[in-house]
Structure formats: structure tokens, C-alpha cells
Amino acid sequence: MISALLALFLFTAPTMEPSTPTPSLHDFSMTTIDGKSVNLSQYKGKVVLVVNVASFCGYTRQYEPLEKLYRTYSEKGFVVLGFPANDFGAQEPGSDEEIQSFCSTKYDVTFPMFSKITVKGPEQHKLYAWLTSEHKGVPSGEVAWNFEKFLIDQNGNVVGRYKSNVEPLSDEIVTKVEGLLK
Image 1 (spheres, one colour):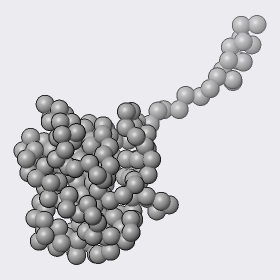
Image 2 (cartoon, rainbow, N blue to C red):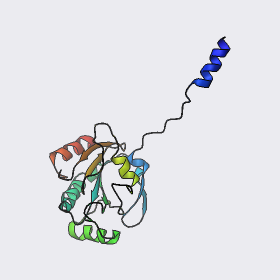
Image 3 (spheres, helix red, strand yellow):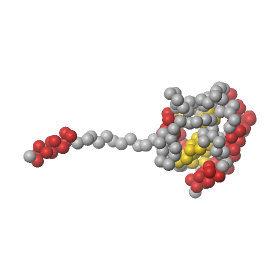
Image 4 (tube, rainbow, N blue to C red):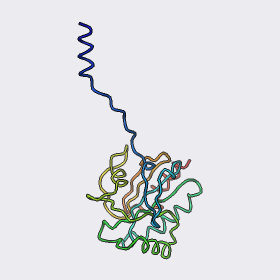
């Protein structure tokens, strides 16, 4: 009887698959705006602000405060990562070279910029599929417009999301960045 029950248990017990770790920012590799492959694990231990950017948007002026935020906190372990996207009103039509030239000459951008990607829809890049998925305490769903911001902690977890109209130097973002850097 006991062996029959044991056999029944063994054949009906659910199999335990090894759990896959929850992805983090550090699990992605991306191409920089000048064509180099970069593993985002190089940002382990840093607070990161990921932003989808565009050159011909009403929010393009945010390059200036993004750069100021980057320069203010970069020595303390903070970085801004810019991802050009042409998903909203065709406001980023240029090539990577044109985007890089625009950012450096018009806004003196020194934070890392990446090759143009798609941030929403059926061609959405895996990085943005992960960013816009469910994260504890952070709204999920598609990116609504250019210059939407995702704040990532030192362990690569999404801990904040800010709509386009939230200024990079707003108290909301600066307070959160400073808190994470402590």
C-alpha cells in the first residue's frame, strides 16, 4: 500500500523547473550610437536613468537638464543612458551619425547614447519590453511618448518611471536619485 501511494505521488507530483532569475538591466547588451556592442552589466553598482530620446520633439530641450543631472551625479555613481527612437510622430528620423552630431553640437551631450531602437509596438526592443513590463511599485504599459524615463537601482531593477512631462531636474527625480546614491 505504501509503495503504491509513493508511486502515485511520484507520477503525479508537479515537476519543479529550475527558476529563471528575474531579468535586470544588467542582462542586456546594446549597441552604442557609434556602433560598439556594450553589455549593460558594466553599469552594475550604478543608478541609471534610461530615456527614449528624439531630436525633433517638444521635449528635446530635456537633453540640457539630462546632461546637467548626469554631470552633477556621475562622480557619485549615476549615469543617463539615451536611446533614440522614431516611434512618435517620426521625430527621430536621422541616422545614428546625425543623431550623435545633433546631440553633441546642440546640447553638448556626454552621457552614453545608443543606436536607434523601437520602444513600442510589434518591433519593440527586448530592453523596452522588459522596462515596460511589471515591476514592483512601478506602472507598466507601453511608452507613451519621447523622453519617458525609467530609473534603475544599483542592482539593475526598475524603481521609478516618469512621463515625458516630468523634468529631469524635478524634485521627484532628483530626490529619488539622491536617495538611491546614499
